[in-house]
Image (cartoon, rainbow, N blue to C red; front, top):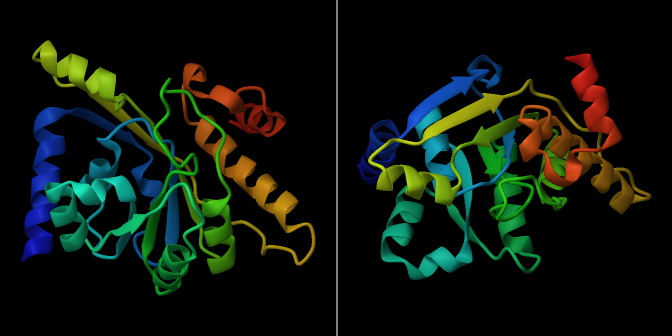
Length: 222
């Protein structure tokens, strides 16, 4: 019951307080394991996942700092989310997330690891590419605009609902992680993920990946 109530609350918040546009929803696998890799702009981002998907096996990682907030703990417990230490290698969480992904879950992660202060993409970490490659799971690149905290707050102050746009790209898979040059391979995989997200974003949001050669290739193929 707690799960259904918490999902209902989050859906109502999104419906009542945003003007949401979604493109590419047909690219989301209806079942089975996959990784939703997204840019991270604001605190509203995780709510969109529960609004757009009715799956009961969502694997959501939540920053450890929110453990101190009672309402956050309530939602994390009922949604079966996982608290994670973003600043240290949390291998226990990685193993738990990988196990649930291999069992068929939907893992939601922002490779950047934290909210972008400018709205533009920042340098990503290899955690998403590692988990996706280890599990052999498809990756669904997802791009968000309009969820920046300052944009949301500013819209509310003007008694307006912020316009939020979600663009979902086609799934793709990564090769297995090689036994040699693992770091170089994971960096290449991470760049691939981020460039696919960047290709779905307006140019002003592409940040450190704006001039990446792989992004140029992707944009030319559209």
